[in-house]
Length: 256
Image (cartoon, rainbow, N blue to C red; front, side, top):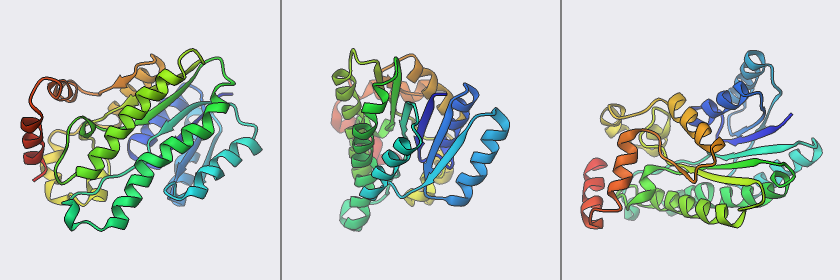
């Protein structure tokens, strides 16, 4: 049976993507840092969908973790058909007032880890007649976002990396897509230290189940970019037509 590898899969959008793929009868390899959450969710998925679900407890910001994923796939002779790079997080605050080691860790996880996982998984994916890479970015990727400056820049990298890799793999059977969610009801706000904005953000948030379904449907339709929700799609389109200064001023106001 075909295997889907999902990072950041113990909750939020990643876990909802796991449910979407399990419902389509994919075996799963879920990767995250939480042993307890992964173990319980794996058991629940196996019981509900009757598929094989394995997990790896890894901190993917560490270089050795990517090799551990590769080693697991080789030792289990897994037939990888889907790679979803969902693991990532944001940090809220001005760059000057941030801790550089925290920014660097976020940059490592948000940018370097997806690149390395794609590099490691492409040979496995090419063995399949049709296979898929889905990288998770954000609507923050389409303009500078003051106080989320570094996070937005990492997600802009994900969008451009995905588009370039998509062209490089054209004709191989490996389709590369990028999904850019807007505000979603996950643990992102708490992890980013944005509790002061939580009430405001929740008013505009989509459900992770909805985002996951749109993302997986778009991936299988081989879309280059997937932007869930009309308002999110519209806001991204505006960035192509309005002056950058105006877009950045609006973004600064949202996260002030």
